[in-house]
Image 1 (tube, one colour):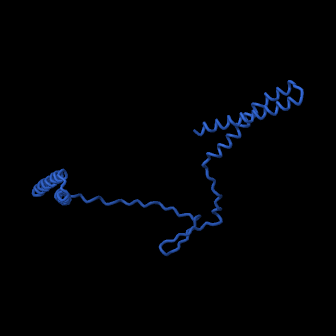
Image 2 (cartoon, one colour):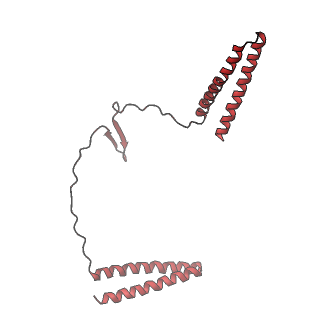
Image 3 (tube, helix red, strand yellow):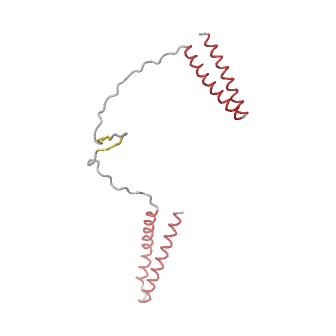
Length: 176
């Protein structure tokens, strides 16, 4: 759309300039006797007029659609190298050109994680199942209050599954 507009504007400007040039040359030709060099100069100046008009329209359009924002220059960092920050009723001043001393990272070996016994693993699983059972029961109560049959059925099945899982885990725990 913008390109069509630019082409139309260039064409209209060219036609206007060409008509003005033609009128000017016609007036000059009428006042002076016709000669071959005048016709040659008109035909030679037409491509130059076209090039000038295209350049002018191109420059005008590039300024119309240019969204580049020029920022003012930033003051030199060497003149003001302090940065102030307000930290909860404290004013801290940092020097921006100070170097932080580099240090080698200390290599620390972490202790191996405690190896859980089978009994401890089962106890953790039982506590997770209890928490999940409580959540499912709460959801079942909320669905019952809302009288949502699909949710009651879904949460009822979850509660039954959690109870069966806890019974199986407790049975497994009795073996250890």
